[in-house]
Image 1: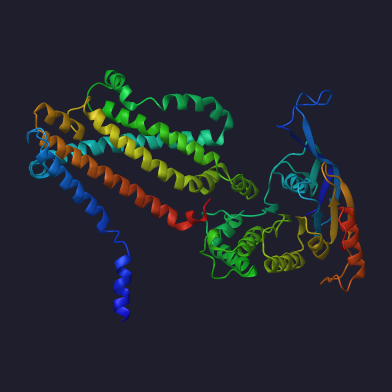
Image 2: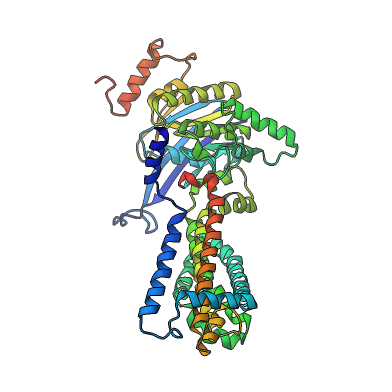
Length: 264
Length: 263
């Protein structure tokens, strides 16, 4: 009787592992149906099977890996630069009211300018190659990082700074024992958001300024009228975006399991 | 050590809501007085309870004594030195959530001892403080995993670990349920009896003040002035039923605050 009860109970429990795969299967099915009945030629709108076969060929030849590595390299360098400069600036702006009122309008003015709009300037300034792409990725994550760090720092409970003063903390201790732990949860969320923006920008930047990377692969395949390669590039972009998000979320869980449950 | 002189301290805050009244003094800003020439002197080891209606400025007075805020006029002198900034000689125990939430109980207590070179001595002292407040077994817990009373006790341990001359407590029992409140009160009285540190406790609870204090100071409503400054030479443990004089004083203070004791 116990096992029967368990079975009925388990029937009502959702299966968290299976759900996303079902959605992906539906997506593949829709793709197949659309490509078959759209009336477009298979060259223009290939179905999932030829695309996956082409993707396998690209992967086997090493081309796919080369372009993926090129894109990942650019996003890594650009994003690190943005973190390296954006976090300290955000902390300074969050702690110093005078700097904040001085620089905040400028940052809010630059922030909404799409990194894509910077492409002509980036190419003129940095030429062709990795540099303009890295510059654009840097721009795309720098401003959101500065803004969210500023907000996170300025919303730290002032009691913690009083505790720090009461226990004779040095400036360095205030940074390492109060500010950094206090903003960690918000900062990881900000990383997640700005990394996904940076990944969007990578592809756009590579379509214009460089001769490698997943964006270039798509552009080059379009010129060769190989829509199966275009779609293969898109799939890899999606998969890597998914993995980056997963990585950041894991990082967030690592940092939050300890104390973030307190709600402040 | 632990002698406090509050010398004619005044505090004013700018009022942001109201426009300056025509003819009001000052340089265009309309200032609201909160403390009005408070002069008090506390001896070494005294337990002083500061009583007053909420919002009367008693917390402001404590924050000035702790050095978190400068007075607008007057000065605070602790052991012949003028208070200009916070110092670990006088530790402030916060109303609520003064523990750093990203540190365990152990790490919080360690804050005041972090300069100790000798690791073993340090660990011993931390363990000792945690034992005094009966939090053994909770060393590796984070504040949000503790109850309200345990959090206060942990903060008490953190303050005592520094071995300050002065303990400053702002409404140490607010937000606790009745029994926890009583236990915490006992804890604070015991702490004072054993350590003999000068202790300032701000409270709005008349009974707390009369049971705990060697001395009771009643502040008036805004701007706060000293309304009553009274020594409490009663034996401990104190009980209102056995000390008719204490009961009489309690009635007087109730009346002073504009409340009838018996309804």
